[in-house]
Image (cartoon, rainbow, N blue to C red; front, side, top):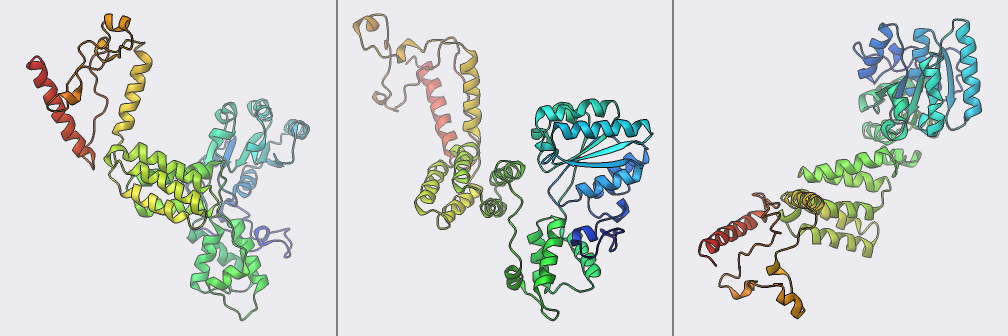
Length: 438
């Protein structure tokens, strides 16, 4: 595995933060992102072809997007120009574009790196299109947000989106080893504390190096911290999570699919992830109420009332006591038999209702509150089901224009097995009554 960082970097002061001291000086020194930088990686192939196209680098903070962009410019001998969408406006962009045009006349190509490109509004994003198309700049934008939601379709059509992954434990370990080599001192952590440190970094390499600096600054040369000591020395980082952005949707999707997939352990993990990150517990309760209807339905009719009860319990108890009710609900839903028969039936019924116009129901099942309506046949021939021996009349209830339909098809799981028996019984009885002329 290639080294992540060079221990020494030309032009960087030894007093600089570790993240600057250990910044890679070539693509070969970058670890991680092997799908992009490995021998068959996307960027390696692009460089080998001699053509560097515009790119959108998408991934969490601290995964090397800025570093890779700078090294790409070095690799293809382009001028590297960096701006941030947080601090730049239209006037700044125009200045950068004019500078790039001037340099192009001198035979110099410009790689324009735009950090947090998603913060530019739609009109500002459109401003990049002409200079991308005429070759004034090769645009490399970095974003932590899903480009599908945050960037113009026109911009995305002119750039290749490359996904940057969070650093894994092995990569964080190598990063820590490089930091130890740079400082000339081993991290004063026992094995459990070292593992906990990587969890605190949450896949963010820059954050890991910041935590390592805190540890070195706060400990004596002969001191070794256990996990509890580590948490006292460093301020605990919140997991990367924005309740209105991509991390939010990824985790709620993971929770829903693990419940649907009947994996209570994974479901509890994602529930806990979201609670730790500060998600509104009532949002989670509402989503689990939906799961009870969508994925369990009539296979376990108790799932929906239990989901509502869990929400009410949380509202009564608050946090953290009420969170146990949500955990109980999460396990119940994950271990319940699954059926989406009601959802499928409802969707089919809605589709027919939208397309069938407004055919009247059969006259037999319409009330006749007035003599006029009774004279016109409203309610004529209606059979009161409770007056039959079986408590079932077998009448036709669909409009004549539509005819009998079959939307609800229960599955052989949970309570719906009992419903199948009932429906089969009524179907046979309906046929018999018609044959007997009842």
